[in-house]
Length: 428
Image 1 (cartoon, helix red, strand yellow):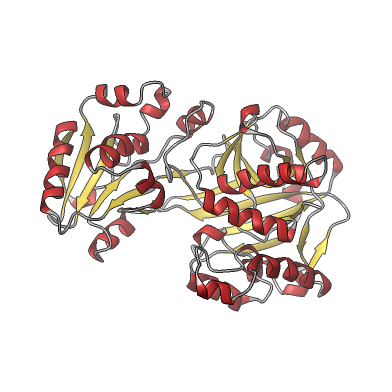
Image 2 (cartoon, rainbow, N blue to C red):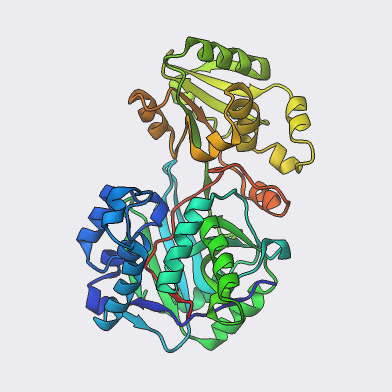
């Protein structure tokens, strides 16, 4: 049973900081050095200062000169509270959230959800389920930050088998939003603070029957487990901040992440092996460049292919699942029919010869969120070959989550991201 409760949030005083727009930020792992500087220029109280107290991935002497970034984050939280920029709510609330967005494919949607605290459960309990593999580095980074701030700074985005929005929609309809922010992609996020105990009880009761599928924030959730175990006993550290959207929400979209390979342009032998290997496993048909995207194509294992050497587009269609089923024997059928798993198993590891470590470390492998970005990176010479994937259906995502299988990294692209800085969840 999922335990979903209101929280006594630590949040910005919008009168003190000017606007929610000035202080929110994307999740830490999509922020580069220049974006971080731009966010800090918006406001000295921008959430990036504490959620990403050093540029992501920065190591070595330059990082050492900055001192302990995690301690600085904790000190900043204290200073912001003393300055009145952050205030602690004495009354618990559930926060309703609505996001108007245009997807990478140009379609427009409105996604709904709530922000609440959720009891941390081990995956074995079957209440909260992962769907992607994680890496140790980001988890250690997030744990150090959690120790220093004693806060959940950024919500984990999860999908609920019971939709919470109908339980809060009526209240939202009669209240003005507490705050609103628009990100650089044009996504408008609105949040409402709901203090009605009756709504809290309805949400807790209804979601007690739900399973929660982690969509974005696997490292943060595993960090929450580690922190809970480290502190021990009962208390606020047994909960974590989540943004919950119903699996049936009409605004929920899952977009693909495309795969890019390097190391082929100056290696004719490797090019030859790739071409021959693909033709052994796939039906390969040349298509016009504007048909590169396989969106809407039926069948198992269908991809778009573009290479910077020949500058031609192709449609790949898996001819036979026998080899795939043999290699992935023991995996559920939903996983064996997952485009990202097919590409990883037969092409990345099989034909291209990448190891599991290569894939996790992104050696010779890159990712792009759109066909346009994929082709641009090939034109720039950063990569040589692009594999264009189809979106994963929500039902297939659910089926894989309910099994013991974990998808390859970057299998799903849940868009838009949930902003950091809407609310913080105290852990002490």
